Length: 193
Image 1 (cartoon, helix red, strand yellow):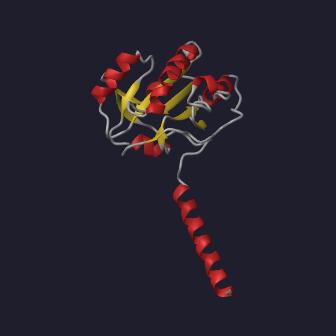
Image 2 (cartoon, one colour):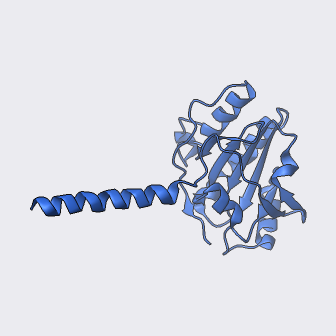
């Protein structure tokens, strides 16, 4: 019986080591943000460098067909309005292979998006950032190091929101501070690759 207990512990340690190894290269708070390249709904190629003059950049992985991502669109529009004069930029990236640029153009026009919306059909940007769901947000500071990873706020229903994580992170960075909350679990629909 003691032998099986030892082998069980060895097996558990091996599995934990494998899980840790698989996650070791995942983007973390404090890491330099990876470059990305995507095609914007206005027909231009869009890269991380296009936002080099912004003090703070919010990168949002989203899509057209996830009800949770769609529920957040108005919040993203309002956020962009609220911070447009504060040297903050917001960019939405769609990496779902089930969607296309034409549908994105239609969505952006219908909703009157006031931020760039771009398509990366390769999915490389989501892989580099470690985005798993839509919406999944990354707040980047002036030096383009990651300051926050997770959800926009704590509740899909706007009337139940108690914590606004992305606006709080942006406000902290604009004040020259680090956000109090630097990461939480993003909730939404799994990215389709």
